[in-house]
Image (cartoon, rainbow, N blue to C red; front, side, top):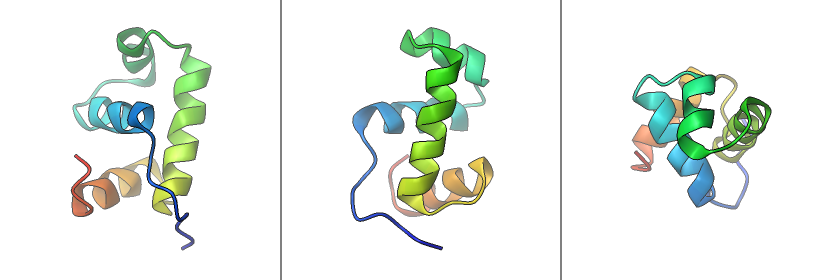
Length: 68
């Protein structure tokens, strides 16, 4: 597991919060006024920041780090 040295951006943190609340990519995109493709790209970036191999693991790691 490789963790980047930078913290997730404010937009990535907003996204992880929405996803943890159970929003789909489509619903998160509407709430954030973004395209679904952008939401999926942000999710991949967030997973990279956290060193997560799955979306679920990203949520767990974000919670452990106190990000959500």
